[in-house]
Structure formats: structure tokens, C-alpha cells
Image 1 (cartoon, rainbow, N blue to C red):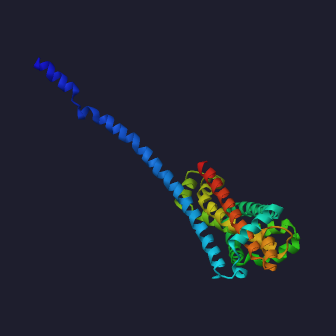
Image 2 (image 1 turned 120 degrees about the vertical axis):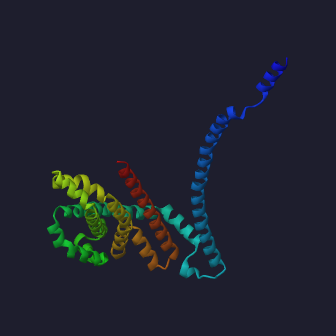
Length: 288
């Protein structure tokens, strides 16, 4: 009888050692969920803080204008900017100007970045030509490319072609210098080792120089987003009939500061979109 009682008591008594693996597995299952929840919270926190920051700045701006701490004719007014945005968007003028500037900036960005990167990498193939062209590249880099804008407009006219050419000329020299510098930073010991085992110059270029220069080229692409926008807008300032640069310039001549701000904010949004596209391309290239 006592043996049976002891057996029943032993069966009903929990055994920590036996249940420990189950508790450990339960904790292990809960941990990833906690990490995922924490990561989601952080992801939501950043955009929420960004919205609050921008909204707070606009609210302070509006209050300062209404309390007459700032002069509306000197700074504009958020509520007036919103009304101007609705009017421009409703008439289709804002969309038209944004599309014109986007085309100019994107085409100038692509032409200048691609040609500049190819030319900069190709200079690695001939150190003699690179040495000959180095002073010219330095001089072009130091030259304010905006000074070429009047000449380019004379050569290409007042249409979209001149704005694309200005944007391409600015982005070309940036990509040229950056890609050439990247090709010079590749590990020279690795190059000498490949030469020692009989690799041709073209094989070294294709398998080592180009992949090793990609981080430099990627950094140039990020910079060229802003430079392409500068080229397009400056060209529109000098001579244009459409585009966000023309929108800002024309609104400024009329002292319509709310219209100026609409154009500026549209340029900022366009720059963010282009930068996001470049980041997406970088990630795609990184996977391959």
C-alpha cells in the first residue's frame, strides 16, 4: 500500500528536470516574437518622429505668422502654401513642371553617371593617358559647372536638351573622378598576384577593378542625384518655359513666396524619390 501511495505521489509531483526543456523551448519561442515587436516599434517610431518634427515646424511657422512675429511677405505662410499647392495641383501646372524637371534630372543623371563611370574605369587601362588627362580633370572639377550653362544653352537651345546637357556635364566629372579614384584604390598586391599567374589586363579589369570600384561608383551616384537636380534647375533659371526651376523663378519675380515654397518643396520631394530609386538600384546590384 505504501509503495502504491509513493508511486502515486511521485507521479503527481512535477519534475523540474523533466519540464525544463519544455520551458526553455517556450522561452525560445517567445524571444523572437519580442524581438520582432521591438523592431516593428522602432520602425514605426522613426517615421512618427519625422512626421511630428515636420508638423511641429509648420505649426510654429504658422503661429509665428499669425502672431506677427514674422512678416508674411518675407517668409510666406504654411496655410497659404497649402492653398497655392492645391491651386497649382488642380490646374495641372505643378505636375507638368515636376515631370519636366524629373525628365531633365533623370536623363542628365543617367548620361553623366554612366559615361563618367565608364571613362573613369577605362583610364585604369592606360596609366599614361590618365597622367596626361589628370590636370584637365582637376581643372574641370574645380571649375563651377554652372559657368558653362550659358554656353550650353547657346549650343543646345532653350529646350529640354540644354538642361539635360548641363546636368550631364556636372554628373560626368563627379563620376569620372570617383570611379578613377576607386580603380586606383584596389589592392595592388592582389593585382600583382593575378599578373603573376598569367591573368591578362582585361581579365584583371573585369574581375577585380570593376567590382572593387563599385562602392566608389555607388557613392558618386548618391552625390549625382543632387548635382543632376542642380543642373536641371539652374538651366531652367536661365531660360525655360516649364519646370520646377522656372516655377520658382517665375513665382519669385511676382513676390509670390507661397508659390516659391511650393516649388522648393516639390524639388525636395523629387530629390527624395530619386535618391530612393538610386538606393534600390544599389541594393539590387549588391545582391548580384
